[in-house]
Image (cartoon, rainbow, N blue to C red; front, top):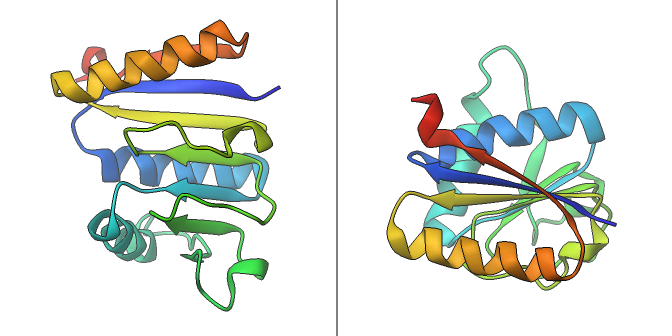
Length: 141
């Protein structure tokens, strides 16, 4: 059953997602990032070319011809057919395919609307018996 980590009160989603991608790739090999929108997809794509500065995180968009052989897929398209161990979600809605993954990281912003949507998803997972862990990033500032 999927293990779910909630990262709440996130000020800079790109920074947190980039860190999570690096960690998930090192530990699990294949990662899928579900971004909020086209702008976030483009920004994360750019960031992963330069961060971390001492390593390369092999990534592409879901629609790339290289997607089948690339270990990190980033896109805002809410679908996923290939293999991956970890899903990182930045969208406000529940990813319809989350249960296919070993791990799910929910990245929740600081504003009240994002926190309310995150609480709804937390309750959904909790009611279905998923193992949940919460990480309040406001406490780490």
